[in-house]
Length: 128
Image (cartoon, rainbow, N blue to C red; front, side):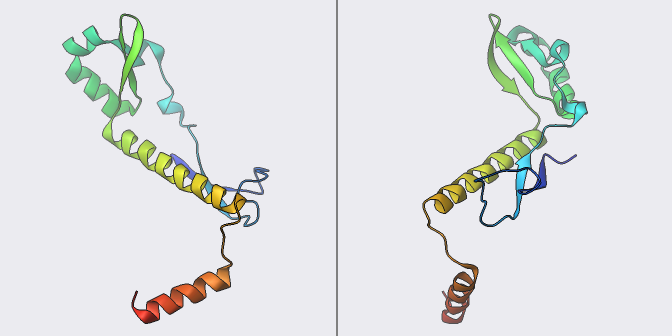
């Protein structure tokens, strides 16, 4: 299952969330059962990390589940595989863009479709 899936605004009754356009938005879903945290495997001490680093790297790359690293019983860091890190970073970037768009809609900083395509066409003709 993909981390980011298309979701219809109307289907999810998301009032005020880009409501005027009623387009397909993307939402993050964490429903892949294989990636649910297993407390006995996914919370480790820094001492365990020091003596079992290779095993922990193998585990996170096989399971794609993050491992929480603790020090003195308190969480101090998270170890994750590169693929999951890239997906999460990409999803956060996308959500930031959506949030910026929502602010633009609320503050009426929008342009109609015809006007926008006319502007783009003129810029392309001008070579800008």
